[in-house]
Every structure is written in C-alpha cells, then in structure tokens.
Image 1 (cartoon, rainbow, N blue to C red):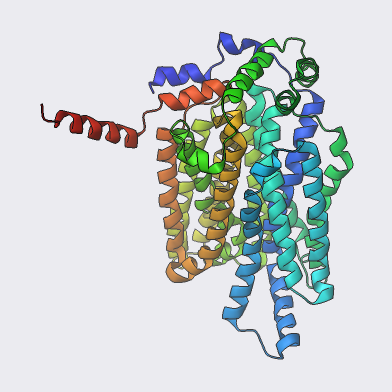
Image 2 (image 1 turned 60 degrees about the vertical axis):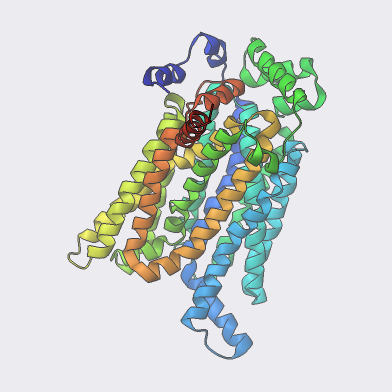
Length: 510
C-alpha cells in the first residue's frame, strides 16, 4: 500500500462527511461505559488485588497447609500453588472464549446481566476462602471471574460497542475497556495497601470488591441501549432501527448508516454465518485472520500481564527497597490509567494501525532497558530507578497501542457473518497467551533472571513489524471498505506463493 493511499484512508473524505457529523448521545456513552467498566474493572482488579495481597494470601495458604497436613509447605509447593491460583483466572478465560460465538445469538444486554450475576457469586466465594479455610474456593472463584471476563468483557463488550457507537468514535470508546482495566488495577493496588485491606485479616474483603461494577450493571442493564445492527438483523424492522439510530446518533440523517446495514445484511443473507473452523479455512478471510490473530497474541505475549501480576517481583529484581514497592506499584498503575486516557484521545485522530506500531516499539525499547537495569542494578543504587521508569514506559506503550486498539480492531475487521466467530477466536488466543505468560514467567525468571525481559522485547519488535505489514488502516471506514482494504494487502507469504506458482508455470514443458 502506497504512503499517499494510506494518508487518504486516515483523513475523512466526502463519503464519510455525514457519518462524522454524528454525535455521541449520552445514552450510547453510558451504555458502552457501563459495559466496559463492568467487564474491564474486574479484569484489572483481579490482577492488581492478587499482586497487592500476595504476601498475606501466601501466608494464609501456608497456614491452611499446616492445619490440613501438620507440616510446613515447602517453597516449591508454595510456588506451584500460587502459580495455579494465578493461572485459574486466564484458564477461566480460555473456557469462556469458546462460548462467545454461541452467546451472540442472544440479546446482548440480557446476556451481560446473566454473566455478571455470576461474578457476584464468584466474589462471595473469594470472600469465604478465609472463613472456610479452603483455598479451593479461591480457585473456583477466580475461574468463574475469568470466564465472565472473557465472555462479557473481551467477547460481548466489543461487539456491543461497535454497534452502539458512531463509526468515527469507535476508537476512543474502544479504549474505555483498557481504561477500565487500568482503573481496576489502580484501585486494587490502593485498597491492597497493608494499612487498608492488604493485610492478613481483610484481604478477603479486598477480593470481594471485584463484584462492585457487576452489581452496578445488574442495577441498570434494562436501561442500556439496544444494538441497532442486532435489531435490524434479527427483526428486519427498518422503522425501529432508524428511530433507534436517530436517538443514539443525535441526528435525523442516518440514511447512510441505514444503507450500510442494508448492504451488509444483503451480503450476509447471501452467506451462511460462519464458524471458527470456517474462518480458519476461508481463503477470503485469511488475511483478516492472520493479521488480527497475531495482534491478539502480541497483546498478551509481550508480557503486560507478567509485568502487572509480578510487578512486586519485578521491583525486587531491580533492587527497589521492599517498603517502597507498594507505592511504586501504585504509581506504575496510575501511569497506565493516565496513558489509557491519552490513548483514547489519540484514537480519535490517529489510525489504530500506527498506534499499535508505536505501542509495540515502546514496549520493546522499555523491555530492553529493563534487561539492562535488572542485570546491572548491583553496580549502583540509582540504576533501580531507571528500571522503574522503564516499567512505567512499558505500561505507557501498552496503553497507547495494544491495550486500546486490539479488541476493537478484531471487531472491525470481519463481516457480520464472521464477526462473533472471529471475536471468539481472538478471546481464545487472548486468554491462552495470558495463561502461558502467567505460568511460564516465574520459571523463566528463575532460569535466566533479568534476561527474561529480552525474550519479550524481541517478540514486541516482531509484532510491530507484523502490524506494519499485515494490518490496514480502518479509521473512518465501513465494514465493507475495511474488508476491501484487507484484500488489497500484499503480504510477503502471498508474494512468495505467487512467485512459486509463476516459476512452476515457466517450467511447464511445451
């Protein structure tokens, strides 16, 4: 794709002028905000609360083991148990990812309400862990919360957002999910201070607070906005869809968006709704699957959750004084929240393709610096502060790039018939890589120490290159236009395949 063509795609043109005049109604905004807040907050809070209360929870695990077996838990047993508890959250997400494609058959608002009621149940189980002296409740509770976060948060929420939002504001509204995650992480680190809830007697209360946003959604789900696309595709009621669009967009001119829905419905009517297996084998969707799948893998595999979950260990490895670690963790998560707000603002003006490239490159450079500081911190005390700045920069790069744009990119890149299956595939990759990083990180760190960051730095550089090659600009474009952009991409593997075919043709004997 030529540079001038790319620039033309970024800027609004005559075909999008009526779309960009649409406004975001308060009804649409708070509906999307509540959906993302409920799904994203519990994601970030689940990460932050376990990190903040790691010491008292591990102490409780040792006490439970002593009561049951009348012997002290070894360091290896404690690490295996702790990693298992941490991994239960993304394992629940893996299970939940298989249900996203099935749940798309039901009305989004009711589905969200049912799922978030399960979060309340799971939070009660977490709170009962201490009283019941059974860490199995901790495992079950985190499994359920991971399941809900995958289905309601990373699965249904982006599908709902792209329907309710004006096209030119999907970027900034998609960033609300990352903002909610970082806000949940930030609040968990504050509440997790030893002086507040992160102590041996109150850590169950800290874990129970995971359900607060879910309770808010259960109170107001009935008043959230229906999805226009779901309404039109389910009932083909043009009058009701038009009235809903006018209310959501705060304008009487929704003719272009209605026409887009008609065109998309006509194309979908000619196609069967595809399954995950079909999108993996479809030649027409190969570029979308290849491009978005690796971006989703990069979102997790570059180490963001390892940095968040094991942030305390990161600072210890970098030589930070133990008494200061909780406050540095709060500062790092605050920067992440602030960076997500900046990323949301940038998403209005800059295409997600360029934000992703910038984000991955920032992550890569930050991880290289973390490698240097972790392996040289014994030379001088001030080197540990460079590691803190590097961790903050890593959070900033993630928030600006992958954090704010990955799930929205997946939702925008596929036609309606394949969108839910693609979102389900993305959720599986998202949570599988999350689990992989959570399980592998501590053992990798034990094996090679600070050089573990260099592994993730290399991956971040590779994913930046992938986005440059395999992801087109999607900003200010309809779903059909985005599909055409993918078709125009010339991937290296396709060029090699064409050259191979051409060489075969030239070698055919006459």
